[in-house]
Image 1 (tube, rainbow, N blue to C red):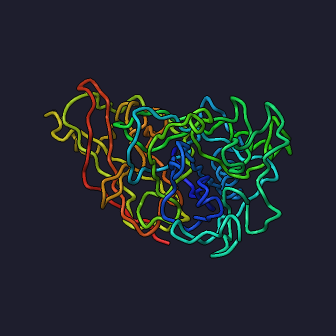
Image 2 (spheres, rainbow, N blue to C red; image 1 turned 135 degrees about the vertical axis):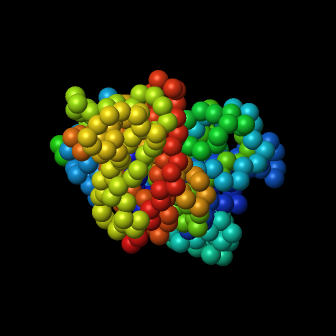
Length: 391
């Protein structure tokens, strides 16, 4: 498969509002970027999101699917978050992601937004047991640094509420997603260059600036927006603790297609085409890899005088043919028709494509669809082919 997703090891939201700077939200179902107005004066307090993906899972993809090479010309890595409820949004939005700085490990914690945080003065009420705006974990010795940053290498918070994470800076350490309030609010952040630096740390023991340790990502508004004195509303995203099909994910995309059309075979560049899916066992173990084969032919073969059946002839779709995967219950697109990364392959046996089932959420049904771009235009084929991924 040219799409492979892994899911977070941990995630949480950090709140800078004075009533919530000691609050942990590690088990909340929602991650959010929000500016909350102070009860006294026109001061807006922002939030930030922390998210981390397991080192071993990232290494498994790089080693076993990408042969230890992340070539940005042929591979893309995206950090995806899916929008929940959003309120009072301004029109334009820019969201950034940076890698958290070395040695800044943090704990997710087990609390939720509605847990009562300790008092900022007495420390009473429920003590946080994970990352907050002030601390990286439950230990008061683990405060996020607020000074000592190295210009051009790392930075931290701003003066309104010191804390809130420490991250690498610079163009090669930054991913951006911009949109308007009436657009699709899902986040798709290109973090290819950042994951390249994780890889250099794994395999070449490279240090900054070539390689960095994976401590996770911080997702935030640009500093100028956090400090501009205006509210931008509430942007909510599903966390790894969601009970929906929309947890965050880190998606690796690459072109694994190989297309060889054997000279004596027919390429179906026009007409009514019938697709038949082979090797669909209907249920697949999550640790498995499956090769699906497509038998393709004209739905109504031309009338010819021949000594064999027209239905036995191997036919090929054009090289501009693609697959897509959707959630069977919600019809949510899991893998889109991507003209760069979901091409169908062809060999002497016909058309085929591969899927690693571990990149899907288990115990759900999925639907396969196909797109063929030929002389007739763009043609979508939905023949009701389903499969289930089981544990």
